[in-house]
Image 1: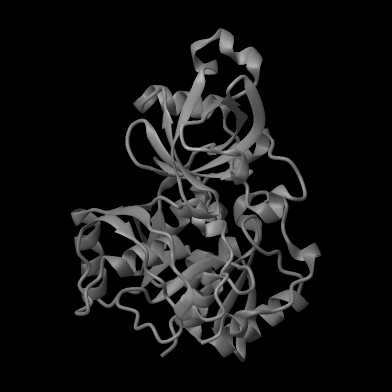
Image 2: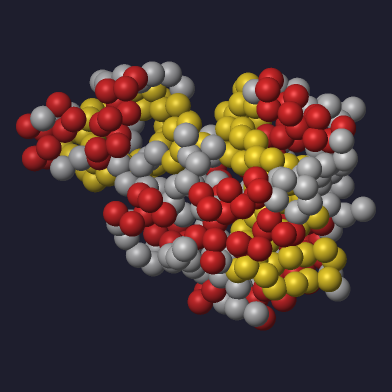
Length: 358
């Protein structure tokens, strides 16, 4: 298939720059087919599921992974920006840096304003240990482990998606807004945004309705922001991301399936890890490692029956995934409906509830 098969026109005014308040007051598009589309509110979710169904949520926590600093070399400096991508060791991170042409292996980089050097957290120094293609580098920090985590938290900004960052600066509100209420495991540089609609009262209402909630972890990398540059789906390479699904969660979800319950993933990250942990026989097993699964039309789903997800970018791997789940023509119709009805798109936008095509 061609990447152009997943293109559509989106008015820029529909790109959400702030989330709904309260979170569960966002709109929810219920999609059962191209002729069966219904406007709901996210707080309606408990009534749209059945007792015995299970929700699978990604409990990753976003770190303030966007760092601004200066490259130091032979007494000269140059402004640089880094977005941490994937942790490689207690002191090493893979990062996307720009401008890439100003960087050489061995360069030192000082992150944070110069006046911060008066305290230990101000000395966030790194060495450029390696340099790859498209601005990807490996940074070796002088700090390690919890000390490095504290320094990143002190200096970093929340890594808002480019389509938001291009229109406004990150601020203190984003520290809370760009984090799910159930975030626990630090390591992502992008939020699992379908989870941003959940509130503690809504989760209590789901439990009361007999819907069980289960957690896995997939640390979302900066690759989620990169455009698809290939002309065909076969020519695109997914970035690997680290995830974990425990033995207890695997057993609980297998039990849900055995009793006729449906498994509904909250977000494409949850779905991708769950499918990575499921065998051809449909049995979910514990998982700890990297996944680069690329789900496109024609994929045979092994575990997921439904998906709660936001509205995605044209020509993106995420729109390809929802087209694989519910059908390309169904998703074209659903997105055309959402655009006509003024649904808000992308990370801070509205949500949809999709079901697997028969």
